[in-house]
Length: 203
Image (cartoon, rainbow, N blue to C red; front, side):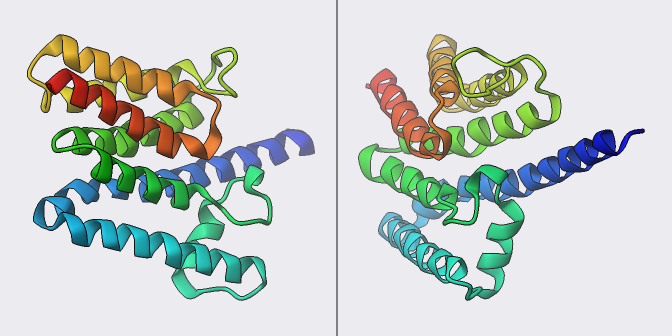
């Protein structure tokens, strides 16, 4: 095997390991609806505090002062496109979950957050692991990733929405929103869009 092939193989494994770490952290947002069911105001406060603390920790890291666990996880989960600057993924993730709670009643808010956690999360992971065919004009999204998003959101929606066609509509909308070439902003666009559609279908 040539040195170039070895280097590409190493880079590929590194990217997959990074994506697994990223998506594990990403899917932790699925705990938000459970906490919100106990105390909505406290959950919003925790999310807002977490966003502020993470932003401060990232500012410290960029300036060369690492903040214990936060900086370690950020470095381990950062992609090459993030460069040496602040990694904004967790910020938009927290904002997306918080907006879902503030904008929509339950269970639309929960559906929005689960779509963010599992639809977007599994899409990125399956796209990295099994994605071969890219979808044009999506910034590198793959058929495998989009299919993972659709199936995961559909299964969740079937347990929340009263009718199968409504669940299909939510899954299709989540998949289309996830396909937008919006980088980390999909963490906001996806839950806000899915929450709106779910709320409309439940009226």
